[in-house]
Length: 358
Image (tube, rainbow, N blue to C red; front, side, top):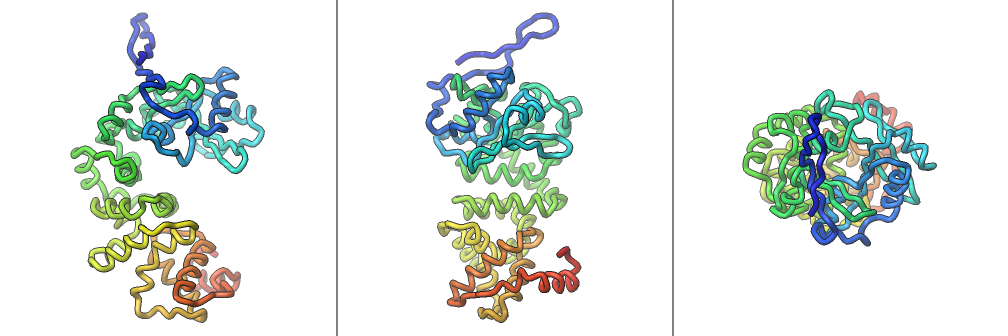
């Protein structure tokens, strides 16, 4: 174990971070994406401090295979784009870069400042950037070249203790971004870590803040949940905290019925090999318990409308909803050959009737 120091204005050295070696953090370098390593190496070679960061580092320490590898650097978005041919800058307030390599997409962000508080959108240092991250276990920086983990917030200790500890002060962590409540519960399920009592209390007290979150962000979070192999347990835990009522209010209301609750979660427990199968889990139990549903092709678009209304405020892509409902029709022995739901004439009629965008 090493210590990283910085120097105060008076020249006095101040401990800033603990640096863990390979033998201490235990990350298997063969599980680190080679393209992510290449991105880090190229930025480093051009003089920019760069690391793999966030959930990927947490998963690697836990011996799991990360789904995504996010990268953070001292390089500005313009610097990053110049170094990678298949890169594009995204975002409006705080700009970051997506680097496309083969079929993979890597998000490369620049260290952010605390100059204007947690909502600052200016560039800063690694010491500032780490204080903007949500939980200590997600705030570790991994150097795949030297195989070191840099820890400014005792995140390694929290991983060893198996606890989810916020970095942002408790007074503001959920008011600044209520979606962190969803993530805390999700992390608890997927890692097996416990949520401290004071954090649980804060979530229950502030769960209503989720009502201010846009449908697009809620949709993004729901997709992350339903595609997870832990979907059933995540949903059950979210429901216990009162959170699921803000993600899927119609389902949460019906889950008060024990039979519906059991059937609903069983749908998410099944192995899902396609995106439409994951989405179908959201609507299957509702549709199958609705006596007004008629499983024949002539009623396909009405079933699609019922499914769409059920998942509100989620706003899924029409094509995905179509494929999911088709899958459920197939389970009932009905092959839908033509997707009226997606025709331009149907969209115009539906938009005029319901006042929605076509």
